[in-house]
Length: 249
Length: 321
Image (cartoon, rainbow over all chains, first blue to last red; front, top):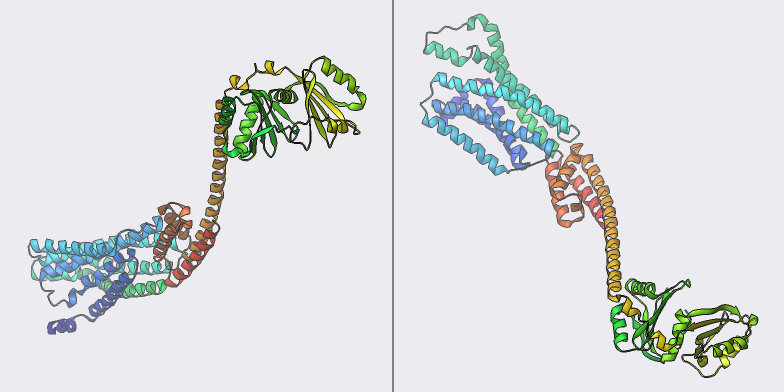
């Protein structure tokens, strides 16, 4: 516990606020999944998993590289689960079919996470470069699926725009836009090797040079965007679920 | 139909609905019956004259005075028995000679019809009957009264008039009617009783087939009527169901929006069509399905209101079936 509080004090205030927001958003979305229809379960669990993936900053065992890699895998599973949920909702809007049950969704998510954990266990300890690759894959998937989810949310809104909760989907559209900016700016930095992880790698382990000094302005801008958009994303998820909860009450 | 002498009644007021024409005819024929059987229906009367078990004449007369004889009369009688489901059968035993006279009355040769008595020399006519040794029946009638004199070989067998149940030997009533203003006569003649014995309608007609055909026709008509009624009922039910379905769609659409119609269509389809709205079990499943889908789109308060409105509309709709 002492180590946990020590980590909290060492954390960047921005990252800490972001984790707190994601914690709140995760709690609200998880609570939302329990009291509502099955289709919401995937969406809620997905947003809850984002909190888990973001919580590595306050994880006392985060120095275990496999655990760090696992956080990124959880993040990837999170957006896939969310996308699955919105796809199901869209299918419902077109066919009015509601199938499956909540327990299967919970268990399936757990099974995917367990398999991911097993994948990490049976493979060698990831190097900092491998961990960075995990993070980059996660960001790429997030960016791609955010664009897809914005389109799905738009279609859902068009199908149900005269119902009580249609405006809630506009809120989710804003959420995905924030996440797209957050993850997109992070991915941008990674692709051009201007991210902090790469800078750490080349300063300690290789003799490679970086052109970051030449583009410090856009790097700084992207880092700021990523930071603010990250906080805004967490805040918007909590707000979107609270708004949706109010609409469905 | 004019009244006939009753002779010795064998059966009276037997319910026709319980009888089969072939059985009645076979029974009378096998019993060498002589006399007549009358079937009284609300709209028609049928007389069947038997001579020693042989069916010598059949006459069916409707309320409008339309008469049918022979094969056509048998068919008409079978049809009446099958269709009407009511009526009474009377069977009267008569002497051979009187039976012959009844036959003359029903199907004999008409020598005079509705002749005004004032214009006829009745004595000459009676003399002619006697001289020609005529077999037959002389009917004297006015609008209110009627009397018959039956002849065999030109000699009167007896007298019969309205209000009497059997043949009388006195001619007083006949003379009284003949004296009334506007009195008319009919004169019918026939062959002798022995010659009549050569005729048997039962030998030349397949009464069982006539009966079976009538029964089959009647059954097919009933079936057709039932089918028509069922189809009409189905159409009415289908119209009412469509109306109820429309109401349900309006209510759900009001709370859920345009996708509400789709939700109703889907739930109706899953529960066997709109007929589930008038079935308790089906309605319950339908309502649950709509509620479950609406939970994804509508607030809890609105769901409650919508379900109350739906429940009430379906209850009112159900009460009309």
